[in-house]
Image (cartoon, rainbow, N blue to C red; front, side, top):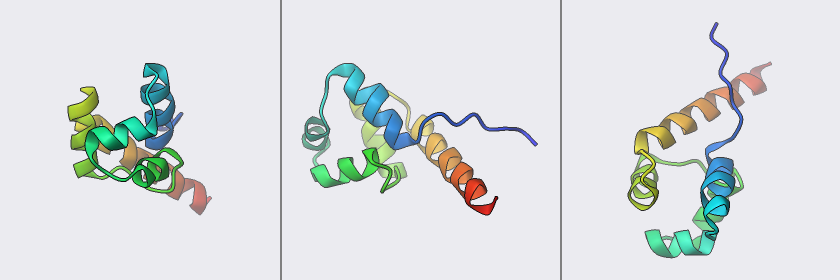
Length: 86
């Protein structure tokens, strides 16, 4: 079986590697996308996943492909399911 190297959830990646590295806030992103700050907070704190629609919005704002985001989300969900099953 191929081992997935999981280092970050999509929310952790968004929070630390995208927002914090660029000196941006969750509030800024919510305003830029036009959504509630709560949605961004829930994603960054792993209480909510990244949907395909949200991935497209992130692609538009940051230039990071929607495929990257949805793939990362799928891998994270599979990783967590395997962890729960063990």
